[in-house]
Image (cartoon, rainbow, N blue to C red; front, side):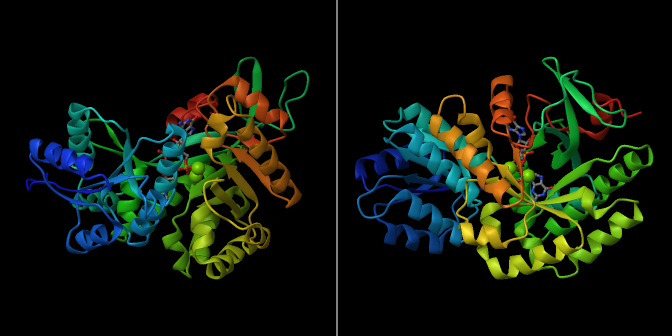
Amino acid sequence: MNTLAKKVVILDDDDGIAKLVIEAVHQVGFTGESANNFESFKEILSRNQPDLILIDLVMPKVDGILVLRYLASQNCTSNILLMSGFDPKVVQTAERLGVSLGLSVEGVLSKPVPFSLLKSEIKRAASSNDSISETDLRNVVANQEIDVHLQPKVRLSPPPSADNKLADNVLSIEMGGTNYEVVGFEALARWQLSDGSFVPPSIFIPMAEEIDLIQSLTDTIYQNVVKLLGKWNRIGYHLTAAINISPRLMGNLDLPDKLVETAISEGVATEQVILELTESATMADADHIMEVLTRFRLKGFGLSIDDFGTGYSSLIQLYRMPFTEMKVDKSFVDDMKSSEEAQTIIRSIVHLGHNLGMKICAEGVEDLPVSMALAELTCDYAQGYYYSRPQPAADFEALLNIA
Ligand code: C2E
Ligand code: MG
Ligand code: MG
């Protein structure tokens, strides 16, 4: 627990608001500094690593998006609260962008912000990482106590046959009268604290990347997953497993051979493993990434672009990279029911992906209408709470009747 007073920095061109925020910061017992322009904001940050940064999204000379990009380029690990009087949709987009850039965006405050809410939000957002420390993370990773939960990935298209029957060695989930074939699962890292609560991956994955633990954490997840695949192969169920790979690991030239060796030792084909990389990661250093991805692909691994639609891939890069699958980000999937634009985007992604020879998987499917609409758009696979939440391996086996 950090016993020093928290440091808060606010960037807002409106001096009145900045003063109000600083007053709130003092009242909750923290220290604060304000900047009314980008230059002095950068100057403050060069002297300080604040616990919390508040940013006004709309300022005359610099917009909040540029500020977020700047913070990402500096690998800023401070928590961030965004403030704006603007249309909530725009602010949510900015929030998503911040998260996709790897920033710890804690939330959004709509102006005018009631003073009591301002105080409670500052207190919450500055303290959200208090319960865990780097040492805790080092310990759980060293003791291989990072767990893996599995979320089923179901086939949407082509749909099940009219009699709704699947072959004997095919696993399935029945929802609303439909038997969905389970083609595989995504492995998601889980860190459970002694009080039973979970630390979200959005907190500990960036921390693991920062302190060079991500290789070791991914090794543990990979070994666990490949063991499960091997065990199920031996009783006749051949599933695929998607593993999230941090862009930091792409510099490790031994990685492809190491992953192949582990797979073979458990009796698993590399074709059963799909490596997921976020879209923004693939664009950071395209030539190098292309080389590593091609090596993975030549060894048989599937390659998936995660959170597709939130980054900035150029179509040319996408066309040249050896991806086998695109995962449509859940923000579009969420919006499908209410927004024609979201439907159009998904339809276009499905089209584009299929024309480039890729499969499409939708993430974050939470209900039947969305599942049906995606099947209608010939989206190949889906994941989401509608079919099943991510769960421990034993519960996954029980759900799918894997004897
Ligand atoms: P992701 O790879 O895009 O994983 C999908 C996230 O969506 C997971 O969040 C999952 O629990 C959540 N999700 C699945 N279905 C639904 C749904 O219907 N509705 C909603 N609202 N959410 C759904 P989770 O487990 O919190 O993971 C967050 C992110 O952390 C992952 O996003 C991935 O980028 C990262 N992550 C998780 N495990 C690992 C890991 O082992 N290594 C690395 N490098 N990153 C990981
Ligand atoms: Mg993923
Ligand atoms: Mg995703």
